[in-house]
Amino acid sequence: MRGKGVRLGLLFGVCAFALVLSGSVVARTNHASANGTMVFAGAADPTYLDPALVSDGESFRVTEQIFEGLVAIRPGTTSIRPALATSWKIARDGKSYVFNLRHNVKFHDGTRFNAKAVCTNFNRWYNFSGPFQDASATYYYQAIFGGFHHNESSALSPPLFKSCTANGNYRVTIRLTRRNGPFLPALSLSAFAIQSPAALAKYGANQGELRSGTFYPTGSYAFSHPTGTGPFKFGSWTVGQRIVLDRFKGYWGKKAKLQRVIIRPIANNEARLQALKTGEINGYDLVAPQDVPTIKRNSKLKVLDRSPFNVAYVGFNQAKPPMNKLKVRQAIAYGLDRKSVVKAFYLGRGKVAQEFMPPGLFGYANNVTKYSYNPSKAKSLLRSAGLSLPVKLDFYYFTRSRAYLPDPTDTFQAFKASLENSGFSITPHVLPFRPDFLSAVNRGDAGHLYMVGWNGDWGDPDDWVGIFFQNYQKAWGFKNAKLFKLLTRAEGEPNFKRRVALYQQANRYIMKFLPGVPFAHNKSAMAAQRRVKNLLPSPVQIERYSLVSLG
Image (cartoon, rainbow, N blue to C red):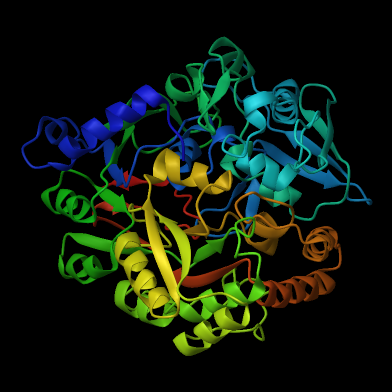
Protein backbone atom coordinates (compact mmCIF):
# COMPACT_ATOMS: atom_id res chain seq x y z
CA MET A 1 0.00 0.00 0.00
CA ARG A 2 2.57 2.51 1.06
CA GLY A 3 6.33 3.04 1.15
CA LYS A 4 8.87 5.66 2.05
CA GLY A 5 9.58 7.98 -0.87
CA VAL A 6 13.31 7.27 -1.14
CA ARG A 7 12.71 3.54 -0.80
CA LEU A 8 10.12 3.61 -3.58
CA GLY A 9 12.59 5.23 -5.90
CA LEU A 10 15.02 2.45 -5.11
CA LEU A 11 12.30 -0.16 -5.50
CA PHE A 12 11.31 0.83 -9.01
CA GLY A 13 14.90 1.17 -10.06
CA VAL A 14 15.87 -2.19 -8.68
CA CYS A 15 12.85 -4.31 -9.64
CA ALA A 16 13.73 -4.56 -13.32
CA PHE A 17 17.22 -5.77 -12.38
CA ALA A 18 15.89 -8.18 -9.76
CA LEU A 19 13.70 -9.91 -12.34
CA VAL A 20 16.75 -10.98 -14.34
CA LEU A 21 17.28 -14.00 -12.16
CA SER A 22 19.60 -16.45 -13.89
CA GLY A 23 23.25 -15.63 -13.39
CA SER A 24 22.60 -12.38 -11.55
CA VAL A 25 24.42 -11.30 -8.42
CA VAL A 26 21.08 -11.15 -6.59
CA ALA A 27 20.19 -14.70 -7.63
CA ARG A 28 23.53 -16.10 -6.48
CA THR A 29 23.33 -14.28 -3.17
CA ASN A 30 19.82 -15.52 -2.45
CA HIS A 31 20.19 -19.02 -3.93
CA ALA A 32 18.26 -21.68 -2.03
CA SER A 33 21.16 -23.93 -1.08
CA ALA A 34 21.57 -24.32 2.68
CA ASN A 35 19.20 -26.81 4.33
CA GLY A 36 18.66 -24.42 7.21
CA THR A 37 17.60 -21.54 4.94
CA MET A 38 14.37 -21.28 2.99
CA VAL A 39 14.12 -18.73 0.18
CA PHE A 40 10.53 -17.83 -0.58
CA ALA A 41 9.23 -15.38 -3.19
CA GLY A 42 6.27 -13.05 -3.00
CA ALA A 43 5.20 -10.59 -5.67
CA ALA A 44 6.47 -7.39 -4.02
CA ASP A 45 8.19 -5.83 -1.05
CA PRO A 46 6.21 -5.18 2.11
CA THR A 47 4.83 -1.70 2.60
CA TYR A 48 6.23 -1.32 6.12
CA LEU A 49 7.16 -3.72 8.91
CA ASP A 50 5.06 -2.08 11.61
CA PRO A 51 1.96 -4.28 11.39
CA ALA A 52 -0.29 -1.62 12.94
CA LEU A 53 0.27 0.52 9.85
CA VAL A 54 -0.31 -1.95 7.01
CA SER A 55 -3.17 -3.89 5.47
CA ASP A 56 -1.60 -5.78 2.56
CA GLY A 57 -0.64 -9.43 2.26
CA GLU A 58 2.99 -8.87 1.30
CA SER A 59 3.57 -6.95 4.54
CA PHE A 60 1.70 -9.49 6.64
CA ARG A 61 3.71 -12.32 5.04
CA VAL A 62 6.70 -10.92 6.90
CA THR A 63 5.14 -9.51 10.06
CA GLU A 64 3.34 -12.79 10.82
CA GLN A 65 6.76 -14.41 11.34
CA ILE A 66 8.09 -11.63 13.61
CA PHE A 67 5.07 -10.72 15.74
CA GLU A 68 2.35 -12.41 17.76
CA GLY A 69 -0.97 -11.24 19.16
CA LEU A 70 -3.02 -12.32 22.14
CA VAL A 71 -4.70 -14.92 19.93
CA ALA A 72 -3.73 -16.48 16.60
CA ILE A 73 -5.27 -18.39 13.71
CA ARG A 74 -4.77 -22.14 13.95
CA PRO A 75 -2.50 -23.18 11.02
CA GLY A 76 -4.45 -24.20 7.94
CA THR A 77 -7.82 -23.06 9.37
CA THR A 78 -9.86 -19.94 10.15
CA SER A 79 -10.36 -20.80 13.86
CA ILE A 80 -8.53 -19.00 16.68
CA ARG A 81 -6.18 -20.43 19.31
CA PRO A 82 -4.28 -19.02 22.30
CA ALA A 83 -1.05 -17.18 21.56
CA LEU A 84 0.37 -14.57 23.95
CA ALA A 85 -2.81 -15.00 25.97
CA THR A 86 -3.25 -18.50 27.38
CA SER A 87 -6.94 -18.07 28.24
CA TRP A 88 -9.63 -15.42 28.46
CA LYS A 89 -13.02 -14.73 29.99
CA ILE A 90 -15.77 -12.59 28.50
CA ALA A 91 -18.17 -10.69 30.76
CA ARG A 92 -21.90 -11.34 30.44
CA ASP A 93 -22.52 -7.97 28.85
CA GLY A 94 -19.90 -8.76 26.18
CA LYS A 95 -18.05 -5.50 26.85
CA SER A 96 -15.22 -6.71 29.10
CA TYR A 97 -12.47 -9.25 28.32
CA VAL A 98 -9.99 -10.58 30.88
CA PHE A 99 -6.87 -12.14 29.32
CA ASN A 100 -4.43 -14.34 31.22
CA LEU A 101 -1.01 -13.83 29.68
CA ARG A 102 1.80 -16.20 28.92
CA HIS A 103 4.77 -16.12 31.32
CA ASN A 104 8.49 -16.12 30.46
CA VAL A 105 8.11 -14.44 27.08
CA LYS A 106 10.67 -11.94 25.80
CA PHE A 107 10.69 -9.54 22.91
CA HIS A 108 13.53 -9.81 20.42
CA ASP A 109 15.28 -6.87 22.11
CA GLY A 110 15.42 -8.78 25.40
CA THR A 111 12.69 -6.80 27.17
CA ARG A 112 9.88 -8.69 28.90
CA PHE A 113 6.40 -9.25 27.59
CA ASN A 114 3.81 -8.51 30.27
CA ALA A 115 0.48 -6.82 30.96
CA LYS A 116 2.03 -3.36 30.79
CA ALA A 117 3.32 -4.09 27.27
CA VAL A 118 -0.14 -5.19 26.16
CA CYS A 119 -1.76 -2.01 27.44
CA THR A 120 0.98 0.11 25.88
CA ASN A 121 0.04 -1.31 22.47
CA PHE A 122 -3.72 -0.92 22.91
CA ASN A 123 -3.27 2.63 24.16
CA ARG A 124 -0.92 3.40 21.27
CA TRP A 125 -3.61 2.50 18.73
CA TYR A 126 -6.33 4.29 20.68
CA ASN A 127 -4.28 7.50 20.95
CA PHE A 128 -3.07 7.72 17.36
CA SER A 129 -3.41 11.32 16.17
CA GLY A 130 -2.72 13.52 13.17
CA PRO A 131 -1.58 11.56 10.08
CA PHE A 132 -2.03 8.26 11.95
CA GLN A 133 -5.79 8.79 11.83
CA ASP A 134 -5.74 8.64 8.04
CA ALA A 135 -7.11 5.40 6.56
CA SER A 136 -3.85 4.89 4.65
CA ALA A 137 -2.12 4.50 8.04
CA THR A 138 -4.59 2.64 10.25
CA TYR A 139 -7.07 0.91 7.97
CA TYR A 140 -7.55 -2.17 10.13
CA TYR A 141 -7.79 -0.25 13.39
CA GLN A 142 -10.55 1.92 11.96
CA ALA A 143 -12.32 -1.10 10.44
CA ILE A 144 -12.42 -2.97 13.78
CA PHE A 145 -12.16 -0.33 16.53
CA GLY A 146 -13.80 2.60 14.72
CA GLY A 147 -12.47 5.91 15.98
CA PHE A 148 -9.78 7.11 18.36
CA HIS A 149 -9.58 8.74 21.79
CA HIS A 150 -9.79 12.15 20.12
CA ASN A 151 -11.29 11.88 16.63
CA GLU A 152 -9.94 14.61 14.39
CA SER A 153 -12.50 14.02 11.62
CA SER A 154 -16.29 13.93 11.81
CA ALA A 155 -16.21 10.97 9.40
CA LEU A 156 -14.62 8.75 12.07
CA SER A 157 -16.90 6.48 14.11
CA PRO A 158 -17.14 6.45 17.91
CA PRO A 159 -14.38 4.22 19.33
CA LEU A 160 -15.05 0.60 20.28
CA PHE A 161 -12.10 0.56 22.69
CA LYS A 162 -12.57 2.07 26.15
CA SER A 163 -9.62 1.04 28.33
CA CYS A 164 -6.89 -1.47 29.08
CA THR A 165 -5.97 -2.22 32.69
CA ALA A 166 -2.98 -4.26 33.87
CA ASN A 167 -3.96 -6.51 36.78
CA GLY A 168 -0.51 -7.50 37.95
CA ASN A 169 2.13 -8.64 35.47
CA TYR A 170 0.20 -11.31 33.61
CA ARG A 171 -3.46 -10.36 33.45
CA VAL A 172 -5.16 -7.56 31.53
CA THR A 173 -8.73 -6.35 31.30
CA ILE A 174 -9.86 -4.83 28.01
CA ARG A 175 -13.09 -2.85 28.17
CA LEU A 176 -15.19 -1.96 25.15
CA THR A 177 -17.87 0.67 24.71
CA ARG A 178 -20.30 -1.85 23.21
CA ARG A 179 -20.71 -5.57 22.56
CA ASN A 180 -18.72 -6.72 19.54
CA GLY A 181 -18.88 -10.36 18.43
CA PRO A 182 -15.82 -10.29 16.11
CA PHE A 183 -13.55 -8.52 18.63
CA LEU A 184 -11.76 -11.67 19.81
CA PRO A 185 -11.00 -13.22 16.39
CA ALA A 186 -10.03 -9.78 15.10
CA LEU A 187 -7.17 -9.75 17.61
CA SER A 188 -5.55 -12.52 15.53
CA LEU A 189 -4.78 -9.93 12.85
CA SER A 190 -1.15 -8.97 12.50
CA ALA A 191 -2.31 -5.35 12.76
CA PHE A 192 -3.03 -6.00 16.46
CA ALA A 193 0.19 -7.85 17.29
CA ILE A 194 1.97 -6.86 20.49
CA GLN A 195 5.18 -4.95 19.80
CA SER A 196 8.07 -4.07 22.09
CA PRO A 197 7.24 -0.79 23.87
CA ALA A 198 10.95 -0.06 24.27
CA ALA A 199 11.66 -0.49 20.54
CA LEU A 200 8.56 1.52 19.55
CA ALA A 201 9.81 4.44 21.64
CA LYS A 202 13.49 4.13 20.77
CA TYR A 203 13.07 4.02 17.00
CA GLY A 204 10.31 6.58 16.46
CA ALA A 205 7.37 4.30 15.68
CA ASN A 206 4.90 7.11 16.35
CA GLN A 207 6.49 9.51 13.90
CA GLY A 208 4.86 9.94 10.50
CA GLU A 209 3.40 12.34 7.99
CA LEU A 210 1.01 12.59 5.05
CA ARG A 211 2.48 13.25 1.62
CA SER A 212 0.01 13.91 -1.18
CA GLY A 213 -2.66 12.14 0.83
CA THR A 214 -0.59 9.03 1.63
CA PHE A 215 0.84 8.15 5.04
CA TYR A 216 4.60 7.61 5.46
CA PRO A 217 6.43 6.71 8.69
CA THR A 218 9.36 9.02 9.34
CA GLY A 219 10.98 7.05 12.16
CA SER A 220 13.21 4.03 11.48
CA TYR A 221 11.11 1.45 13.37
CA ALA A 222 8.89 0.43 10.44
CA PHE A 223 11.87 -0.14 8.16
CA SER A 224 14.78 -1.36 10.28
CA HIS A 225 13.69 -2.27 13.82
CA PRO A 226 10.43 -4.29 13.94
CA THR A 227 10.50 -6.02 17.33
CA GLY A 228 8.07 -8.72 18.40
CA THR A 229 7.98 -12.03 20.25
CA GLY A 230 7.66 -14.38 17.27
CA PRO A 231 9.77 -17.39 16.24
CA PHE A 232 11.79 -15.28 13.78
CA LYS A 233 13.47 -11.93 14.37
CA PHE A 234 14.23 -9.26 11.83
CA GLY A 235 17.65 -9.45 10.17
CA SER A 236 17.70 -6.98 7.28
CA TRP A 237 15.67 -5.49 4.45
CA THR A 238 17.18 -4.58 1.11
CA VAL A 239 14.30 -3.04 -0.85
CA GLY A 240 13.75 -4.73 -4.19
CA GLN A 241 16.00 -7.65 -3.26
CA ARG A 242 15.21 -9.48 -0.03
CA ILE A 243 14.17 -9.52 3.61
CA VAL A 244 16.17 -11.72 5.97
CA LEU A 245 14.60 -13.26 9.07
CA ASP A 246 16.67 -15.24 11.58
CA ARG A 247 15.49 -17.85 14.05
CA PHE A 248 14.89 -16.32 17.48
CA LYS A 249 16.76 -18.53 19.92
CA GLY A 250 14.92 -17.09 22.90
CA TYR A 251 11.46 -17.94 21.56
CA TRP A 252 9.04 -19.06 24.30
CA GLY A 253 7.47 -21.88 22.26
CA LYS A 254 8.64 -24.56 19.89
CA LYS A 255 11.68 -23.22 18.07
CA ALA A 256 11.60 -22.73 14.31
CA LYS A 257 13.10 -25.62 12.35
CA LEU A 258 14.73 -23.27 9.87
CA GLN A 259 17.74 -21.17 10.81
CA ARG A 260 16.84 -18.44 8.36
CA VAL A 261 14.09 -17.34 5.99
CA ILE A 262 14.77 -15.08 3.02
CA ILE A 263 11.75 -13.48 1.39
CA ARG A 264 12.29 -12.10 -2.09
CA PRO A 265 10.09 -9.80 -4.16
CA ILE A 266 9.68 -11.16 -7.71
CA ALA A 267 6.89 -9.27 -9.48
CA ASN A 268 6.70 -11.33 -12.65
CA ASN A 269 4.76 -14.63 -12.59
CA GLU A 270 7.05 -16.34 -15.10
CA ALA A 271 10.15 -15.16 -13.27
CA ARG A 272 8.90 -16.68 -9.99
CA LEU A 273 8.22 -20.01 -11.72
CA GLN A 274 11.62 -19.98 -13.43
CA ALA A 275 13.38 -19.23 -10.12
CA LEU A 276 11.66 -22.23 -8.55
CA LYS A 277 12.56 -24.55 -11.44
CA THR A 278 16.23 -23.55 -11.32
CA GLY A 279 16.47 -23.88 -7.53
CA GLU A 280 17.05 -20.18 -6.84
CA ILE A 281 14.06 -20.27 -4.48
CA ASN A 282 12.40 -23.05 -2.50
CA GLY A 283 8.86 -21.80 -2.98
CA TYR A 284 6.67 -18.91 -4.06
CA ASP A 285 3.19 -17.50 -3.71
CA LEU A 286 0.52 -16.38 -6.18
CA VAL A 287 0.93 -19.15 -8.75
CA ALA A 288 -0.60 -18.09 -12.07
CA PRO A 289 -3.46 -20.44 -13.04
CA GLN A 290 -1.81 -21.27 -16.37
CA ASP A 291 1.34 -22.42 -14.54
CA VAL A 292 -0.38 -25.01 -12.33
CA PRO A 293 -0.20 -27.86 -14.91
CA THR A 294 3.51 -27.16 -15.56
CA ILE A 295 4.32 -27.40 -11.85
CA LYS A 296 2.27 -30.55 -11.37
CA ARG A 297 4.13 -32.27 -14.21
CA ASN A 298 7.50 -31.59 -12.55
CA SER A 299 8.39 -34.46 -10.20
CA LYS A 300 10.52 -32.17 -8.02
CA LEU A 301 7.81 -29.57 -7.43
CA LYS A 302 4.33 -29.39 -5.90
CA VAL A 303 1.29 -27.12 -5.86
CA LEU A 304 -0.14 -26.12 -2.49
CA ASP A 305 -3.76 -25.02 -2.93
CA ARG A 306 -5.63 -22.72 -0.58
CA SER A 307 -9.37 -22.75 -0.06
CA PRO A 308 -11.04 -19.93 -2.06
CA PHE A 309 -11.41 -17.51 0.84
CA ASN A 310 -11.31 -14.25 -1.11
CA VAL A 311 -13.32 -12.02 -3.42
CA ALA A 312 -12.40 -9.80 -6.36
CA TYR A 313 -14.71 -6.90 -7.04
CA VAL A 314 -15.28 -3.67 -8.95
CA GLY A 315 -15.95 -0.93 -6.41
CA PHE A 316 -18.09 2.17 -7.03
CA ASN A 317 -17.48 5.60 -5.53
CA GLN A 318 -20.98 7.04 -5.09
CA ALA A 319 -19.55 10.44 -4.18
CA LYS A 320 -18.72 10.87 -7.88
CA PRO A 321 -21.84 11.38 -10.04
CA PRO A 322 -23.43 9.57 -11.78
CA MET A 323 -22.48 6.70 -9.43
CA ASN A 324 -25.03 8.02 -6.94
CA LYS A 325 -27.78 6.79 -9.30
CA LEU A 326 -28.88 3.21 -8.65
CA LYS A 327 -29.75 2.65 -12.30
CA VAL A 328 -26.19 3.53 -13.31
CA ARG A 329 -24.79 1.03 -10.80
CA GLN A 330 -27.21 -1.59 -12.08
CA ALA A 331 -26.15 -0.84 -15.66
CA ILE A 332 -22.51 -1.43 -14.73
CA ALA A 333 -23.46 -4.72 -13.06
CA TYR A 334 -25.17 -5.86 -16.27
CA GLY A 335 -22.27 -4.50 -18.34
CA LEU A 336 -19.51 -6.50 -16.63
CA ASP A 337 -19.02 -9.83 -18.39
CA ARG A 338 -17.92 -11.63 -15.24
CA LYS A 339 -18.52 -15.16 -16.50
CA SER A 340 -16.19 -14.70 -19.49
CA VAL A 341 -13.50 -13.13 -17.29
CA VAL A 342 -13.54 -15.99 -14.80
CA LYS A 343 -13.43 -18.56 -17.60
CA ALA A 344 -10.59 -16.83 -19.48
CA PHE A 345 -8.29 -15.74 -16.67
CA TYR A 346 -9.02 -18.05 -13.72
CA LEU A 347 -8.77 -21.23 -15.84
CA GLY A 348 -11.02 -23.46 -13.76
CA ARG A 349 -9.65 -22.26 -10.40
CA GLY A 350 -12.20 -19.52 -9.86
CA LYS A 351 -15.95 -19.13 -9.72
CA VAL A 352 -18.19 -16.17 -10.42
CA ALA A 353 -18.94 -14.29 -7.19
CA GLN A 354 -22.52 -13.29 -6.42
CA GLU A 355 -21.83 -11.66 -3.04
CA PHE A 356 -19.01 -9.87 -1.21
CA MET A 357 -18.21 -12.97 0.88
CA PRO A 358 -17.47 -16.62 -0.03
CA PRO A 359 -20.27 -19.23 -0.19
CA GLY A 360 -18.98 -21.41 2.66
CA LEU A 361 -19.22 -18.67 5.28
CA PHE A 362 -22.22 -18.42 7.60
CA GLY A 363 -24.53 -15.57 6.67
CA TYR A 364 -24.16 -16.22 2.93
CA ALA A 365 -27.55 -15.81 1.22
CA ASN A 366 -28.49 -17.97 -1.75
CA ASN A 367 -31.29 -15.68 -2.91
CA VAL A 368 -29.55 -12.38 -3.63
CA THR A 369 -30.25 -10.35 -6.77
CA LYS A 370 -28.01 -11.59 -9.59
CA TYR A 371 -26.71 -9.68 -12.60
CA SER A 372 -25.80 -11.60 -15.75
CA TYR A 373 -24.11 -9.90 -18.70
CA ASN A 374 -26.77 -8.00 -20.66
CA PRO A 375 -25.55 -4.99 -22.72
CA SER A 376 -29.03 -4.13 -23.97
CA LYS A 377 -30.43 -3.95 -20.46
CA ALA A 378 -27.46 -1.84 -19.35
CA LYS A 379 -28.09 0.72 -22.12
CA SER A 380 -31.80 0.81 -21.31
CA LEU A 381 -31.08 1.52 -17.66
CA LEU A 382 -28.71 4.36 -18.56
CA ARG A 383 -31.30 5.99 -20.80
CA SER A 384 -33.99 5.63 -18.15
CA ALA A 385 -31.61 7.37 -15.73
CA GLY A 386 -31.70 10.38 -18.07
CA LEU A 387 -28.15 9.97 -19.38
CA SER A 388 -26.82 10.27 -22.92
CA LEU A 389 -24.69 7.43 -24.26
CA PRO A 390 -21.89 6.73 -23.95
CA VAL A 391 -21.58 7.51 -20.22
CA LYS A 392 -17.99 8.49 -19.42
CA LEU A 393 -16.36 6.83 -16.38
CA ASP A 394 -12.84 6.76 -14.93
CA PHE A 395 -11.74 3.20 -14.06
CA TYR A 396 -8.66 2.58 -11.87
CA TYR A 397 -6.67 -0.65 -11.70
CA PHE A 398 -3.22 -2.08 -10.89
CA THR A 399 -1.01 -4.62 -12.67
CA ARG A 400 0.46 -6.79 -9.90
CA SER A 401 -1.10 -10.23 -9.45
CA ARG A 402 -3.00 -10.89 -6.23
CA ALA A 403 -4.48 -14.04 -4.71
CA TYR A 404 -7.96 -12.93 -5.79
CA LEU A 405 -6.85 -11.44 -9.14
CA PRO A 406 -4.18 -13.45 -10.99
CA ASP A 407 -4.21 -11.31 -14.18
CA PRO A 408 -5.25 -7.72 -13.38
CA THR A 409 -4.30 -6.18 -16.73
CA ASP A 410 -6.18 -8.60 -18.99
CA THR A 411 -9.12 -8.65 -16.58
CA PHE A 412 -9.34 -4.87 -16.76
CA GLN A 413 -9.15 -4.87 -20.55
CA ALA A 414 -11.94 -7.45 -20.76
CA PHE A 415 -14.16 -5.42 -18.42
CA LYS A 416 -13.38 -2.23 -20.33
CA ALA A 417 -14.50 -3.89 -23.56
CA SER A 418 -17.71 -5.32 -22.09
CA LEU A 419 -18.62 -1.98 -20.47
CA GLU A 420 -17.98 -0.09 -23.70
CA ASN A 421 -20.29 -2.58 -25.39
CA SER A 422 -22.92 -1.65 -22.80
CA GLY A 423 -23.17 2.11 -23.20
CA PHE A 424 -20.07 3.36 -21.34
CA SER A 425 -16.88 5.12 -22.36
CA ILE A 426 -14.05 4.00 -20.07
CA THR A 427 -10.94 6.05 -19.32
CA PRO A 428 -8.29 3.75 -17.82
CA HIS A 429 -5.99 4.76 -14.97
CA VAL A 430 -3.24 2.42 -13.82
CA LEU A 431 -1.27 2.92 -10.58
CA PRO A 432 1.38 0.87 -8.74
CA PHE A 433 -0.34 -1.25 -6.11
CA ARG A 434 2.19 -0.12 -3.52
CA PRO A 435 1.64 2.57 -2.31
CA ASP A 436 -0.39 4.59 -4.79
CA PHE A 437 -3.38 2.45 -5.78
CA LEU A 438 -4.70 1.45 -2.36
CA SER A 439 -4.04 4.91 -0.98
CA ALA A 440 -6.04 6.46 -3.83
CA VAL A 441 -8.90 4.02 -3.19
CA ASN A 442 -8.95 4.67 0.57
CA ARG A 443 -9.04 8.44 0.21
CA GLY A 444 -11.75 8.29 -2.49
CA ASP A 445 -9.52 9.37 -5.37
CA ALA A 446 -9.71 6.23 -7.55
CA GLY A 447 -12.26 7.43 -10.08
CA HIS A 448 -15.82 6.24 -10.53
CA LEU A 449 -14.76 2.56 -10.62
CA TYR A 450 -11.82 0.64 -9.23
CA MET A 451 -10.88 -3.03 -9.41
CA VAL A 452 -9.51 -4.63 -6.27
CA GLY A 453 -10.35 -7.48 -3.86
CA TRP A 454 -10.13 -8.91 -0.38
CA ASN A 455 -8.56 -11.92 1.31
CA GLY A 456 -10.39 -13.05 4.44
CA ASP A 457 -8.70 -12.67 7.82
CA TRP A 458 -10.87 -14.96 9.94
CA GLY A 459 -14.09 -16.93 9.57
CA ASP A 460 -16.72 -14.27 10.26
CA PRO A 461 -18.97 -12.19 7.96
CA ASP A 462 -17.92 -9.06 9.83
CA ASP A 463 -14.49 -9.45 8.23
CA TRP A 464 -16.19 -9.07 4.85
CA VAL A 465 -19.39 -7.03 4.67
CA GLY A 466 -18.72 -5.48 8.08
CA ILE A 467 -15.26 -4.27 7.05
CA PHE A 468 -16.62 -2.94 3.75
CA PHE A 469 -19.99 -1.43 4.55
CA GLN A 470 -20.61 -0.94 8.29
CA ASN A 471 -19.67 2.72 8.32
CA TYR A 472 -18.83 5.55 5.99
CA GLN A 473 -15.67 5.10 3.91
CA LYS A 474 -14.35 7.46 1.26
CA ALA A 475 -13.64 4.47 -0.99
CA TRP A 476 -17.37 3.77 -1.38
CA GLY A 477 -18.58 7.35 -0.92
CA PHE A 478 -22.04 6.63 0.48
CA LYS A 479 -23.86 7.09 3.76
CA ASN A 480 -26.60 4.50 4.18
CA ALA A 481 -27.99 4.56 7.72
CA LYS A 482 -30.14 1.48 7.12
CA LEU A 483 -27.18 -0.64 6.04
CA PHE A 484 -24.87 0.73 8.76
CA LYS A 485 -27.47 -0.04 11.44
CA LEU A 486 -28.16 -3.55 10.09
CA LEU A 487 -24.47 -4.51 10.08
CA THR A 488 -23.86 -3.01 13.53
CA ARG A 489 -26.79 -5.03 14.85
CA ALA A 490 -25.44 -8.21 13.23
CA GLU A 491 -21.97 -7.58 14.64
CA GLY A 492 -23.25 -7.34 18.22
CA GLU A 493 -25.92 -10.07 18.09
CA PRO A 494 -25.05 -12.78 20.68
CA ASN A 495 -27.50 -15.40 19.33
CA PHE A 496 -25.82 -17.30 16.48
CA LYS A 497 -29.00 -18.17 14.52
CA ARG A 498 -30.21 -14.59 14.64
CA ARG A 499 -26.75 -13.39 13.64
CA VAL A 500 -26.78 -15.69 10.59
CA ALA A 501 -30.20 -14.36 9.58
CA LEU A 502 -29.07 -10.75 9.97
CA TYR A 503 -26.05 -11.25 7.72
CA GLN A 504 -28.21 -13.01 5.12
CA GLN A 505 -30.56 -10.03 5.24
CA ALA A 506 -27.57 -7.71 4.84
CA ASN A 507 -26.24 -9.62 1.83
CA ARG A 508 -29.61 -9.44 0.10
CA TYR A 509 -29.82 -5.72 0.76
CA ILE A 510 -26.21 -5.09 -0.39
CA MET A 511 -26.75 -6.74 -3.76
CA LYS A 512 -29.83 -4.57 -4.36
CA PHE A 513 -28.14 -1.39 -3.17
CA LEU A 514 -25.04 -2.28 -5.26
CA PRO A 515 -22.07 -0.45 -3.71
CA GLY A 516 -19.98 -2.50 -6.14
CA VAL A 517 -19.97 -5.75 -8.09
CA PRO A 518 -18.15 -8.84 -6.81
CA PHE A 519 -16.90 -10.94 -9.71
CA ALA A 520 -14.67 -13.84 -8.59
CA HIS A 521 -13.60 -16.18 -5.80
CA ASN A 522 -10.22 -17.71 -6.63
CA LYS A 523 -8.45 -20.81 -5.38
CA SER A 524 -5.00 -19.30 -4.97
CA ALA A 525 -1.91 -21.44 -4.57
CA MET A 526 1.72 -21.59 -3.58
CA ALA A 527 4.34 -23.72 -5.31
CA ALA A 528 7.35 -25.34 -3.66
CA GLN A 529 10.05 -27.93 -4.05
CA ARG A 530 8.89 -31.33 -2.83
CA ARG A 531 11.61 -31.29 -0.17
CA VAL A 532 9.82 -28.37 1.54
CA LYS A 533 7.86 -29.95 4.38
CA ASN A 534 4.99 -28.54 6.50
CA LEU A 535 4.36 -25.41 4.46
CA LEU A 536 0.66 -25.55 5.33
CA PRO A 537 -1.61 -23.54 3.00
CA SER A 538 -3.74 -21.09 4.96
CA PRO A 539 -7.14 -19.92 3.69
CA VAL A 540 -6.32 -16.51 5.19
CA GLN A 541 -2.80 -16.52 3.67
CA ILE A 542 -1.05 -16.77 7.03
CA GLU A 543 1.59 -19.44 6.49
CA ARG A 544 3.75 -20.21 9.54
CA TYR A 545 7.33 -20.59 8.35
CA SER A 546 8.39 -21.76 11.81
CA LEU A 547 6.77 -25.13 11.02
CA VAL A 548 8.69 -25.59 7.77
CA SER A 549 11.69 -27.84 7.26
CA LEU A 550 13.75 -28.75 4.21
CA GLY A 551 14.37 -32.40 3.41
